[in-house]
Length: 297
Image (cartoon, rainbow, N blue to C red; front, side, top):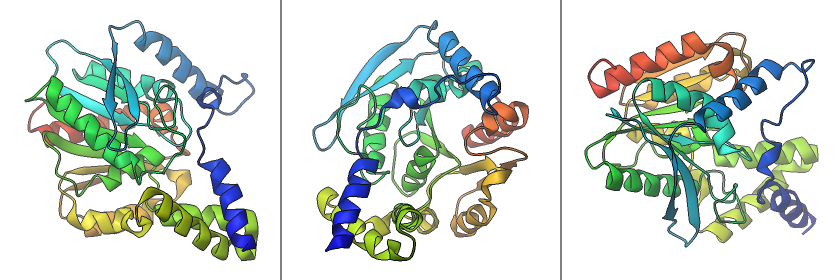
């Protein structure tokens, strides 16, 4: 009984709509993340000067979701971005968005359910968001019926990308997963153990049961290593060396019948590889995308 109460309190708060303005908030020069955060804000100011429009879709469960679309003249295709847990989508994707624009791609930056201007009260860590992303793919196909699509996610967004790996999606040519969370079940377990120590497993069991019932899912289905067994797309996996995701990536690669590229960015932490190792990161992605699309870009 008490474990169920603890689970509802902990995850009721954790999965509620966040204040995205806290994400990538500007810090002082003395902060170790200053250089990265400054690039985030400078890039946002730069990309917002480009022509763009706000587009919407309706989720399968009736939520109006919003994204920002940056068209590129004579585009080679469209990159759909997938932001992380509690993140400000435009801040997170302005810097890589400018990179993809420089390669000649349209860029679509959706806000996940329960984030920013998109409707919804609860985050589901990919269990429902992956279906929303499939709807965004359909939207892009409506706008550009013959255009190539790349899906690139970071953190929770990287996990959502893994959850898409076995889905049939028209015109999707490759998936890019940066610093992904690979298992929703592990997310519940790790958070519960961190907060409640030895009693964490029982709290996690209650939280998972509640989550499954509320969302009509079984989170055991959302495991990137298992999903990779039926992957339909070339897959790019990247992370900072400080994240220690090499074993996870190798497990995914062993299971994936499609090509898997792994890039570990030395000296980088969660999500800052694209800022600290820009040339290495950008060069690897460009090469991977070129191969996936079957030609130079």
